[in-house]
Picture (tube, rainbow, N blue to C red):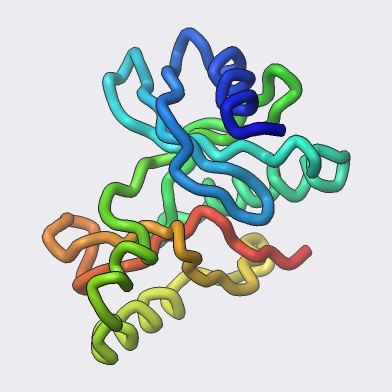
Length: 168
């Protein structure tokens, strides 16, 4: 399905509460769009399950991803605001992480070793338990990095991921 057609379907699904503006990136399971939440006057990101993956198993995995992320309170995990379905699409609405993508950051040169170590330590500090089956995660070229000046960070830049590899 062309990206513009998916954006239009998503806009119909989330109207009138949200205005979908543009695609931010995509991964194996879904596409992420920039949107504006009208009532609260804030920017958000909306992740949509790829229509070709909208089988019972795909939808269940997508919902499980949102539920797991929503259950984690950690500075390196994106905040989930809402899960929804409409126009034959499954989606979740989440915090928008502003800043350059990892790909844009890497265009300025390699990430210094000390910063990589700090990011690794931050990732390793993520909670794990049987109720939170996060197996592992990794940044992709479309991942956003967070700058040190933001209140919730302690390292120069932290990769915040919305796509996690999950164990059952």
